[in-house]
Image (tube, rainbow, N blue to C red; front, top):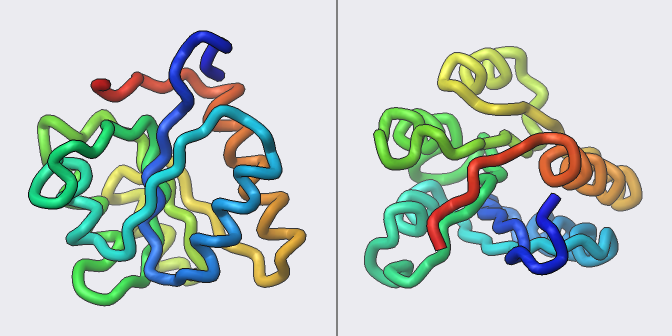
Length: 149
């Protein structure tokens, strides 16, 4: 977890469901941990954000990407494949946070080097609990490489 004088941990949330984005944002706020959440709604936008292209030229480098599997356009798994094949991005931890429980999606995500695969619960309280555990794990237990400022 960042020290008090360090910058907040940066998370890029990639999810096309506005309700899930709002729930994740609310759960992170409720956790009261130092996190800077950025969100985009497509794989294409995620890649532009990570590469600092176009509207995202001034985007900060995230410490962790939370990526939905099922999205229109470039799927989450395809987005993961591109991230992990890019020499400048491949070290970035990418955790799949999705409603898909299909074994095929789990296997494909890990085959493409996902750092973790978590399913979103249906009810709000369980969803908040998952986000709290996710944040505790990724920013209290795991040591992450810090993105460029």
